[in-house]
Image 1 (cartoon, rainbow, N blue to C red):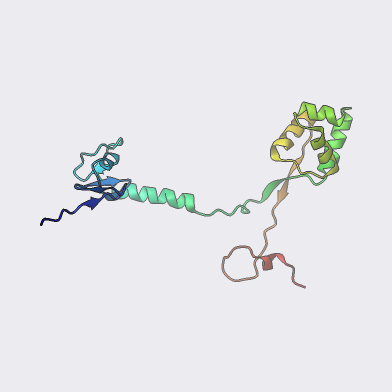
Image 2: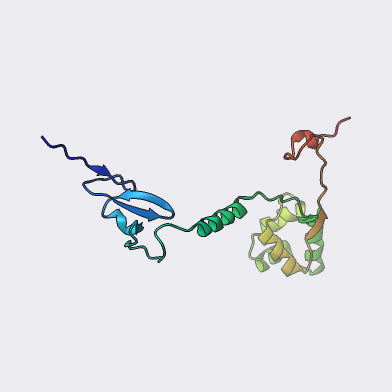
Length: 173
């Protein structure tokens, strides 16, 4: 009795009598006939849409690794010296600019395509405007609602370079 050994395609998992070795995105896979069209065969006869050698060269691999390392590198968002923030007295600024033009809350709301309840909440300070709404108000009222605020860098009390902890934020008496 002769036992037939079927192989499993490493891409789709289907059992097949015949598998072919291909290179796909730098990986070597044993695949069935249907899946072999997705990569370059080991003899260079693949049907890959990109031309080139069967396996990427060391230079290509090194370039890809460097690009990946640049993408994955963490950045300190507090590294810059200033950041843009909403002015603390924005309700007063909005109300005074609206009243200076002689507009009611409903009129301003219509001009910037918002509800009058949104304007009322902004002027009482019950709502903090989103960036898009800040731009609309600044443009329509001719005011500035944002300012550059310097970032205070906290010195960590521990040794080495580690992230900011709650202990760094608490003032010790």
